[in-house]
Image (tube, rainbow, N blue to C red; front, side, top):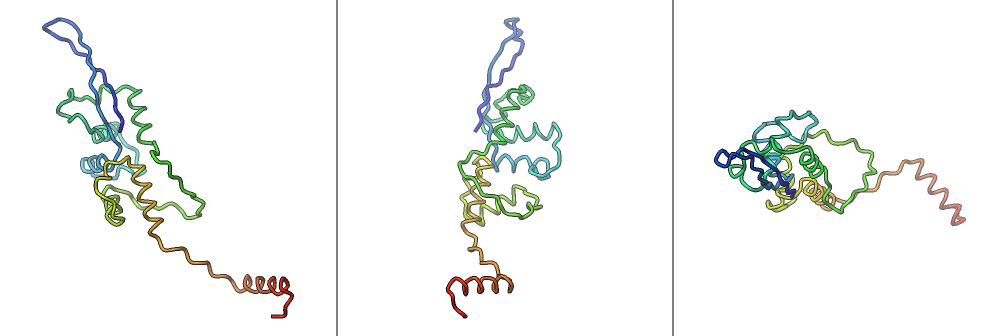
Length: 180
């Protein structure tokens, strides 16, 4: 969860002075925020398509955990500074896990479009409890990947070609000094 302190300034007509106040927002990059955004924009957030400024601000609004949007100044997201936006970007890109994978496979990356419904399906298929939908999205993807790896059947040995079998037999005959 990311907590930001956002400054707002307004003119108090009664006191005839400018007043500066700070309000706090808590944001999370989770399956819940992904779902909210996709519900509003009706397209995959994790797709390769570039997002407009409006869509990016929409995602920041979808990330809001507390306080409720009604409790914030109107158009609060317009008061975010570049430092705030950098912190949000860093939060979204963070790994939030000590787990790493040996990605030495030569398989091409999947072309499957990932939507919130697909992630919910993965959670159901792996019996991941629904409360994990509030985990950081990268961490949830790591958990789903671990479940997939641990639940996969063991890899079968590759079939050996006839030439490889012949070569191996010849090596064994020499090693054990036999005729077969």
